[in-house]
Each structure stands twice: as C-alpha cells, then as structure tokens.
Image 1: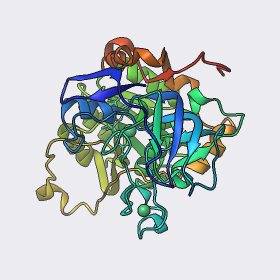
Image 2: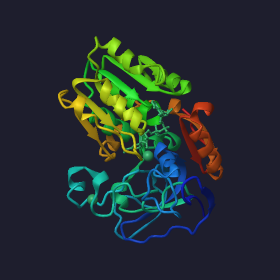
Image 3: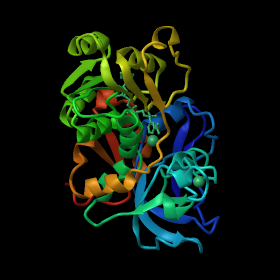
Length: 352
Ligand SMILES: NC(=O)c1ccc[n+]([C@@H]2O[C@H](COP(=O)([O-])OP(=O)(O)OC[C@H]3O[C@@H](n4cnc5c(N)ncnc54)[C@H](O)[C@@H]3O)[C@@H](O)[C@H]2O)c1
Ligand SMILES: [Zn+2]
Ligand SMILES: [Zn+2]
C-alpha cells in the first residue's frame, strides 16, 4: 500500500510500504476512506516531537471501513464504517478505568502516527479496536466525521472543559487553527459572555468570526491591551492556548484575570517560561493536557444532530494520493486559507 512516511525533520514522503496485518487479537485493520492532517503533524515535521522515529507512517485522524479483526475484537466487524480515534485505549489500566485514555499504561494513548504507524495511508492497524474506534451512524458522513478523531474532542476537553468555560465568561482563544475554531464552536455550548479570537493570519481570524467569535484581533496588534480594555483591566476568565509556541503560552498567562483559568492545548517543542514572579499571587489555574477522547460519543451525537459546525471547518478535499500537496496547502494556511484538509480514497459523497 501507499502511506505518508516520516523520514526526519522536513523529509517525509508518500510512498510504498508493506500492508499492515493483525498483530494482536485486539487489533482491527481499517481501510482509510477519509483522513486529515493535524497541526501536531506539522510539529512532527519540524522535529518538535522527537519520539516519532524515522520510518513511521504519520496521521492519527481517520474514518474508514473495518476489513479485518483479530479474534479478540467483539464490537466491530468487517464492513463496519468507523471513526478511528487519535487515542487508543487498552480499557484495563488504571488511567483507562478513569476515562483518562490519553494516559493509557497498557500500550494505548496517542500511539497512531506517533509510536506506531498511523492513518495517513491506505490501511491502518488499530490496536485495542473495541475502545479505539467508534461505529458511525449513517447520518454522519465520513469527510465530516474525521473532525471527531481529534480536533473536536481536543478543543472541547483540553480547552473548553479544562478551562471551565461558564455562562457570561470572557473567553480568549489564542490560535484560530482547526483546534482553536473547534474551541470557539464548543465554548458556545456554555453561553460565554464574549469570545475573543487571536491569530496572526487574517484568513483564520475571518474563520474565527464565522465560528462564532465576537471579537477578533491580530496577534501582532496588541491583543493584551484589547482584552484589558474589554474586561475593565481585569483580564479574561478563561484563556485557551491553541498554538504551541512559547510566546503565545506566555501571552495567555498575562491575559487571564486573577482567579481565572488558562487551558493549554498547544503541543510545545520548546521551553516556555512560567513567570511565577508575577503569577504567584494571581490565584490562577493552569491546565495542560493530551486529549483523552472520553467526550467523543457525546460529540458524535451532537454532530449527528447537526449541532456542531462541520462544512465550514473543511476547506480542502484531496484524493488520498495527493498527500504531499495537502501537507503543503495545510502548512501554508495563511496563504491558502486552509482550515482542515481532508483526503478521501473515493469521491466525496453527501456534502452537507
Ligand atoms: N493537547 C492535545 O491533545 C492536542 C491535540 C491536537 C492538537 N494539538 C495542538 O493544538 C495546536 C493547534 O492545532 P491546529 O491543528 O489548530 O494547528 P494549526 O497549526 O493549524 O493552527 C495554529 C494557529 O496558530 C496561529 N499562530 C501561530 N503563531 C501565533 C501566535 N504567536 N499568536 C497567535 N496565533 C498564532 C497560526 O496562524 C495558526 O492559525 C497545535 O499545537 C497542535 O499540535 C494538541
Ligand atoms: Zn492531532
Ligand atoms: Zn489503558
């Protein structure tokens, strides 16, 4: 089969690799129908995630059809259309039993496209299939469902829920990429008073407005002053970091009010400074997190009910074999206007 393989920073390519096969009784093999590229994949290409070994197939978001299952798989069968979660879960370890699947001790967690071959391929082996894939209702199409593999649960759990967005809150979302936009969309479930989006790219600020941000501000144009002006000098109740660079994390910690919450979603490859000399007295809560995907079933029900933006987040569709071009378009989002790019193995049906 063909797959997108990491060969070290800035050297990755779409080429032939061996087909995956069942290795453990709990594995499923999924034929990939729709797959996407995450901001985290861009961090991997930059060398920010050093545990990704050269030779690894990238990708941790997909929808496809189960083609083979191991003897221990009980809940899915060949022919089922499933969402492949970015997090795999053994279901048995201490953390899985608390729903903290991202921290799985039994061989799961974020493994796809990280420590084992991932989804940017024609086929993918999914370990612990019973807990790592979600059968999809016919009402949700594949090229939208792929948004549930990572960006929606990430934005919702690590951003909105960890940040404890509440009614009337002023919420700042720094970074209006797909994850930041999904945070803007799901923050609205809690009736915040105002959502302010910060990004460097005008196209993404426009997308933030469409996703429901009340105010948008370019990161180069003093967002800290704007937040201060809009909050009587206090700062925001909740600040969500969805970029993953030191400058933006440090800005988040300056924009939050005393007693407020900072929820870091970004994947960081470099040290950021925690300025305790000014923060120690501010009674802040700072949360970090790898997504657990415990919210995926609820988000899937919301998507099936038409309660989550979908089409507006997918700006580009490509056939699977144009993976390198899709990476190029996604990585130059400021020029191309790309939000989520989705690659499909067949024609895109039922575009709603
Ligand atoms: N914690 C998790 O479990 C988890 C899961 C998925 C993704 N992520 C991370 O979330 C982050 C966002 O993902 P994405 O797919 O939306 O990525 P993305 O690269 O598409 O979006 C990042 C956005 O930040 C903007 N930006 C860059 N520098 C900025 C600055 N200084 N100030 C303000 N905005 C700036 C960019 O213009 C871009 O729009 C990434 O770091 C990704 O790795 C984390
Ligand atoms: Zn991701
Ligand atoms: Zn586990």
